[in-house]
Amino acid sequence: MHLVALVESPDHVCCRYRLAAFRPSLEAAGHRLDLRPWPKRWWSRLRLGRALRGADVVILQRKLLPVWLLYLLRCAAPRLVFDFDDAVFLRDSYSPKGLHSASRLHRFMATVETVDAVVAGNQFLAGEAGRWAAGAHRVHVVPTCVEPARYSPARHEGTGVELVWVGSSSTLRGLEAVRPLLEEVGRAVPGARLKLVSDRFLRLNHLPVLECPWTESGEPAAVAAADVGISWVPDDLWSRGKCGLKVLQYMAAGLPVVANPVGVQTDLVRHGETGFLARTPAEWVEALRRLAAAPDLRRRFGEAGRRRVEAEFSVAAGSARWLAVLDGLRKPTSAKGAA
Image (cartoon, rainbow, N blue to C red; front, top):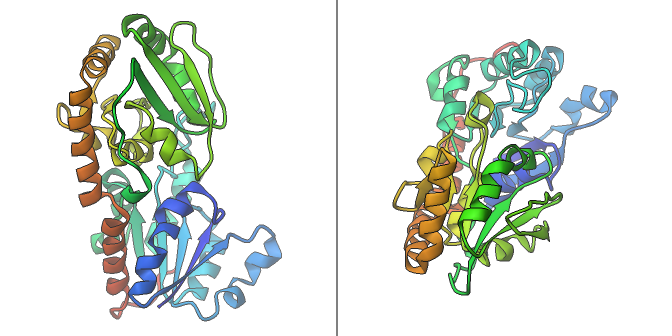
């Protein structure tokens, strides 16, 4: 089948990890995947039918459309799939307007009611889509996946302990919110330092910060050169929609992970097996002290995490799920829903 994905940008992180990564496997199975930026100009949107001519399946990634435009897309697409990896029906954790948005929710409801299939990044998102989709069989979970082969396993050698955090300017606000926690870690864990792989950085008084500007090519090596991956997200509905990419990157690189027990982090981080789930500052300090003092423990947790990524969250595993979705779309369906 000829698949056309309408995306924010082919270079956007969601497109890279949730669609582009699967292209070789899709092509090996006889499919063709084209990635096209969503048209920015209104007259280009009115010509969607012409632009999508020849497509067997159209994948709309993340974008919530006004009802009239969703209708045009529905008419132009023989099969229409909605792929999303965030709680797009909400505003983000740091919005001054608050989480809930009636307009976002209305567009989300219209989208999942209209499409032939919904591909959600985790069970929480799938559950929300299932409330509005025309049949639970239309909702599928394809987690955000990583390619373990891109990551050389961490060696867990050297002095001190290097923590690593990967993210962007927007998600760095999570670390800024727990600045006192990070300062306490710096005071309580001798030799600890924090590497930030990002496009923006913060400064701390008691925990040395290593600034590592993010690049796509350099990211895997920067992660694998550390000792422990960390992740903290706010305890709210928006965070429950996150798909844990940074945690998966840490695990793929053979790092133990310390994270707070929110959303998918409670599933990805198996406490005492691939890392530690820590809620309070005391629990964070204790977890990082244990890992700092025991390279063998870090190595054991890291190896267990990498094995889990290979089995459940690798590109190969995600490709198999996408192929199952596409096989389902080959079957005859009822008439297209109206937006």
